[in-house]
Amino acid sequence: MELSSVVSGDTASNRDGFWDRDRLRESLENCGIRLDEFGRDGCLSVDDLLHELKTCESELTVRPGKRARRTVSVVRVRVLAIIDDQVRALVEVQSDHWLRSPDEKIAKLPTRRRRVGETTEDAMEALLLDIGFDRELLDERNLAHVSKASYEELKTSMSYPGLDTVYDVHEYSLRVRNAVYEKRSAVFKKAIHIGLPQGSAFIGDYAAGAVDTVQRVFFWPVSLNISAQFNTGDTGDGNQKQEENVLSKREGSYSGKFPTLGSLRRGKKPAASPVVAPDSHGAGPSAGQ
Image (cartoon, rainbow, N blue to C red):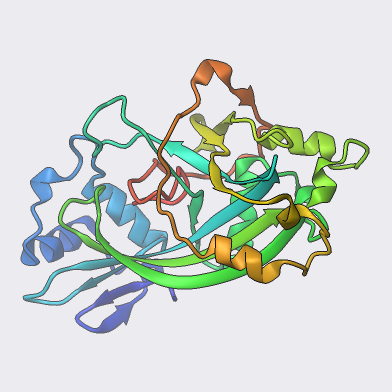
């Protein structure tokens, strides 16, 4: 997907300054979107949307007499680790403004918005580094790439009320290899920063702009109980069909017992990278809703 603005069927480049605040407001109002709901009760503002468009982080289709539609390209990772004959999936805890209770939380697969000029592979690697994966852990000998799926999700944005959003999702399914669990391996200590090999929850402070930081919480809930046979013969390509069957279930969110902040290990702080506020799509602090 080329990240640009689309108006009345014509493509106009955001980098050429097509959008300004007045034009955006008028276009949205002509589509029946109530802008008085923007920028309040945890929702993002028109200026936030304008920033997205100007930086080509999303595209907006506006046709007279029809609904406006925003499109965002995101990368999502499903990282699995086999611990004590259980498949555990790495998820991120989120507490969003649209949930019924301030204390209510959900956990979703880590997701990151793809930026201009990034391939999906680049964005996937950047997301893993943001989470706290050491670059050595990303080697195929330590992290097996099981499958990739691309699909679209159409939802009404919770961050921009009334604005339909198409999420162009590129989901990577990955599995931590047995080598990571060996105490004598070079990557064993590096895996501790992401809660392995025990599958512990971890927390980190992540850059949000030039001076601000956001706190992100990750943990490894049980996704599936399996037999010990699933964990034998880690050749890299054996049992792949079995793994794909396990990974084919697209659970958008996870429920159950959530870790408390006081019990969490503080993960390795990744290199600073720009992020935006958490979203309600399960896209994490760097994806946007």
